[in-house]
Length: 64
Image 1 (cartoon, rainbow, N blue to C red):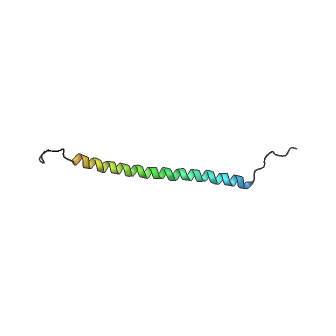
Image 2 (cartoon, helix red, strand yellow):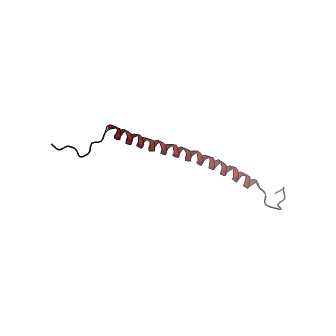
Image 3 (cartoon, helix red, strand yellow):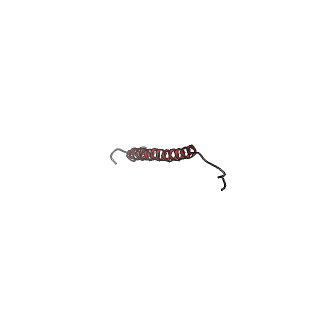
């Protein structure tokens, strides 16, 4: 019977499982941050559009 060419210890698998979970949860964290930023940008755009729509062009009377 041949000996295996490479024997990996249990810590090898624990390490890579931990790294995979770290990357996964990091992606969730970044995605959640982008979702919050998207909502903030939409709120900002709504506020800016509201201000620009109410602004009067130069030399336009108030009664129009």
